[in-house]
Structures are given as C-alpha cells and as structure tokens.
Amino acid sequence: TIYGRYDGTVEVDGDTLVVDGKIISLSHTRNPSEIPFAQFGADYVCESTGAFLTSESIQPHLSAGARKIVFSAPAKDDSPTIVMGVNQDSYDPAWKAVSCASCTTNGLAPAVKAINDEFGIEEALMTTVHAMTATQKVVDGASKKDWRGGR
Image 1 (cartoon, rainbow, N blue to C red):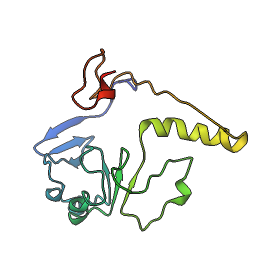
Image 2 (cartoon, helix red, strand yellow):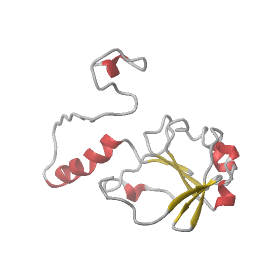
Image 3 (tube, rainbow, N blue to C red):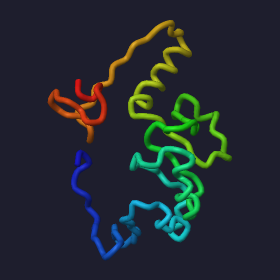
Image 4 (cartoon, rainbow, N blue to C red):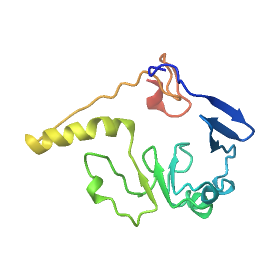
C-alpha cells in the first residue's frame, strides 16, 4: 500500500483474523441477522455492502444486536444524512441509522460550506471524476445498470 509494508503479523485462523495476536471475528453470510453483533460487542456497524440502505432493511442488523448503523453511501429512503464539517451538529442520538452521504458529497460539501459561509454562493456547478469504480467501465461502453453509466 502507499503506507508501506505492515511490520506486524497477520494470520487467518478458521473464522478469525489474528493481527498482532488480537483475534478479530469474521463473518461470511449475506444475512445480517446471522451475524451476532451483540456477541462481538459491535454497537456501531458500518453498512458498506450497498444492499441495506433503508431503515427497514437494517432491522436484521438491529435484531442481531447492533445499536446504530452508518451507511457508507446515500440512503435509499428518508434516513438522515450527516456530512462532517457541514451538518454534524444536527445529529440526533435517537437515530438508529444515518448515512454519511456519498464520496462526492464528502469531498465537495465542506469546501462549498466554507466558501458559502465566508463569501456566499449564488450559483455553482461541479464535476466528479472517478479514476475507476466497481461498476463504471474504464472505457466507454453500454451500461447494464443505467444509461448515464455508459457515457
């Protein structure tokens, strides 16, 4: 990685990852209700699969013992969105799920907020350039997902 080689030890032992002697439990199920979050002491779960982005769809996480769910992508319902440096003061501890928005939002919103707070913005336009994502083609072509993805 850009951080260099890890100096510690990393091993796989059955269903656990052992990093410098610390055991980290792993799961390999698509059903969150089968992951014993409470047993693992996982109060906060970062939902990064993209498959569970609504308050309704995270109920299995909660019933398995997770207390709070953080979506690593925009929610697909009216779940609240928090962007650090922009609206984190509006966070309500009673919320069970919160989205941390998109990578574009997290890259853009703090700078836009700072500029708007200091100078004001009447109109703006932005463009996002991704080097590559899991679903976007690196060469122009048709997209099975949506017409815009095939640009």
